[in-house]
Length: 567
Image (cartoon, rainbow, N blue to C red; front, side, top):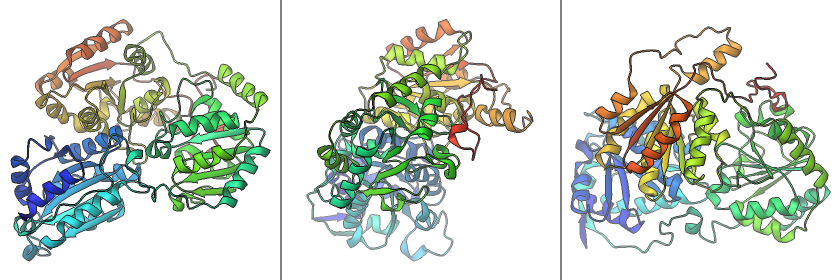
C-alpha cells in the first residue's frame, strides 16, 4: 500500500507493539504529529512540559515495563533538549527509541532555522543513530532501531528523519515483528540473543572456583533486572550459600528482606556489604560494571578474593577491575547453566559472621525528628513494600535506596550512571503510564525538584496519579554534605533558603499539595495521597544538616567505610 513517511512511522510503531509515546511537537515534526492525530485511538501520546521530560518519561516507562520507551521531538532545540535523557538511558542500559525530525534534505548543512546535527550530537550516547533521507529506507530503519535498542545490552537509538521524508510517499509492506513488545524485557529476547559466548571450559572453571571458596559473596547489578534473572539469582545464592549485596541499579533483583541480603555496596553502601566484600575469598559479579562509586580504590577492592564477572557486554570484562574469570552472555542463561553444574554448598560459618556483622552495623538515623529515612520506612509500611519508587539524585536517592525494602525487579528507578538531577518526576510519569495499577512515588530533593517540576503540569493534564514527595532541607544536601566533611564547611552556592513555596507551585500546576513538618503527619499524608488517585505533592521539611551514612571518601578503599558514630 502507498503511505507517506509519517504514516509509515505510525505503522512501524504499531508493528512494534508501541501503545504510548512521549513528546513535544514543532515545525519539522508536524507531519508525524498529524499522523498521530489520525491514530490517537491506537497510540496514546503524552504531551510533556519539556522535551527532557519526554525522554525521562520514555526511560521510566521502559524501566518499569521492560518494553522499549519512545520519545518524539522536533528539530533544533527540541532535539537537543532530549540529550540529557538519552545520555541517562545510555548510561543505565535502558531500551529507548528517540525519533526526531529535521529540516528538509535540501536545507541540511546550511545552518537552516532550527537545524542541528542531532545524530552527530548524540553519537557518543546512543547504541546507534540514523539520519533517514530516503523514504524507501524509513520502515526498515525504524525496525532496526527497535531491534538494536532492545537486543543484547539495551540502550537508546536515535532516528532523525528529514521533514520531506515524512511527507514523501512510497510503497509500504507490513512486517511481522519477531520480538514484539511484552510486559517484560526478558520475554522478548530471542534464543540467539540468549546464547552464551562463554565456553564449557570457562563455566567449569567458575564452578571450580565456587567449590574451592570458603567465603563467597555475590555482587548484583542492573543486568540481573534487564535479563529477568531474579529467580536464577535466588537459586544461585542458595546453591553457593552466599550473602548478596547490590548496586543502585540492581535494587529489587534480589529480595531486600532476605536474610542473605546485606544492602548496597559502595560509597553509601552498608558497612556489612563493604567490609564483607573486602573479606571474601570469591566475589561473583552478576550483571554489574564495577563503577567507581562501587569499588572505591580499585587497587584495594576485594584484593584478597578471586573475582568472577558475568556480563552480556564483553567490553565490561576487565575494563575497571581485572578478574580471574569472565563469562560473557545473557545472565539468565549463564546462571541456568551454572546452577545445573553446582551442588549445594555449606558456608554456615561465613554466613554467621555476616549475620553478626549485620547486627553490629545496622543502618540507623536520628528518629527523634522527621527525616528522609523515617519517610522511606513509612512509605514502605503504608504501601506494604509494593510501590514503584523513582528518585532524583542526591541524599534522598541514597536514603530511598537504603531504607525501603525492594523485593521485586523494576520497582526502583533512578539515574545511576549519569546521576541526572531532575530525572525522577518524568520517569515517575512514564512508569505510572506503563504500570497504571501500581502506586508510583517519586522521591526528590528540593534542588532536584526545581529542575523539572514543570512536569507536574503533565501529570495534572492527564490526571496521572503519581505521588511527588519533596524532601525539602533548603540546601543542595549531598553537595553540602561534602562541603561539611571535606571543604571546611564553606557552603558555596548550596543554600536554597529562599521564598519558593512548593505547595503553591504544585497547586498552581493543577495538583493537590500537602506539607509535612512532623513525624506523625507523614502516614496520614501518604494515605490521603493514595486515596485521592490524582497527582499529589507532599512536601516534607527536614533538617538541613542530615547526612547520608555510611560513607566512603572518594577514591578510598571501601573497607574504610565510616558512619556518624565513627566521626
